[in-house]
Length: 435
Image (tube, helix red, strand yellow):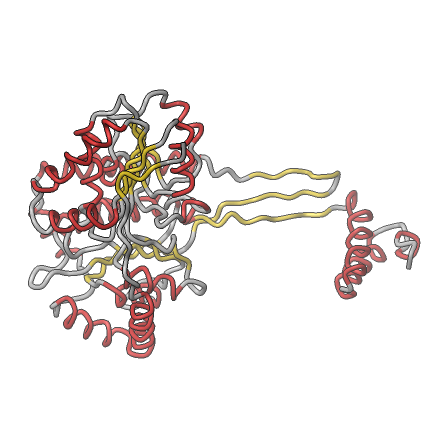
């Protein structure tokens, strides 16, 4: 029997991607021409901020002093997990060399980028964890200079807890700036920042579109859409846990889809009844966001077998994939398309979002088909090198010249031929016996 939808997403009206794209294009053009003056003007108009854009060390120290010690300790706990996981990733990026044939040596090096920009979202929520995830990972990779930016709040600036997280993670330069203007400023190297080689971090649709439009001259981590999450559950799952795990992700926003895929009709019914009760316990605006996401975008899918459930997950490619089912090793080995995988009822996506260690900047909207999330690898260039000595030169030059002439690339052929003439005892015409 094919999969059955016990709850389906409602048809969505056409989005406003074209309008967003046009608005961002205009702002980026204005920033390219107006630079710091235009950035300050946008900060005043959009964020109600007329204070300094560059956050001074004195400001950081004063802000840190206001952060309760218990919160500092918890941020430090999360930072240590994130740092240690990134360090383990970095240890796996091994430089190497190999002698492919006698005299033909090739290798690779992992070279850190010189400058990175980390965007830390503000607005409805104070994204402490995003500061840790982006800045820490860049510094562990060996990036020499990291600029961080976050939207200031009117009359306050960047919230103190975010400033503490930025400082702890190792930010070299902090800008009280949000939105498109922050992304452009970091790309251009305004306000004393180093021009960014790469821009990373989540943000709203305008931030995501600004990164997309800047990509090319500047690298980006990925083009990210709204967050999404899927739970795979069998009859062993706890309906209350599943319901809260879905609600916890739905509160991101009304455009954040969540899915429950299960082989147990009774579990599906319990979860569908429980979710509205969970949502009702949330404060506003979280309650409204979760209600819209659940009512309009959530899906509950009933399958016959675990294999069918796994195929639904692979076909969807969720950002977060949480397995609450028996035989976790089977699921870990079988599943192939996800941003980050959470195994067992003791796990929850919220752990990954905030403190457990693996990065929470992940592919959305099915992009897990072709990419993973943010990691030290995004801040490293894996470059190759090669060296040729006399032992390999004759055959290598002969083959290169032959292939080049077959392709019609005479200049390539002659750059090989001249090495046969200059460095090899065998004359070129003898080596390339077809002329």
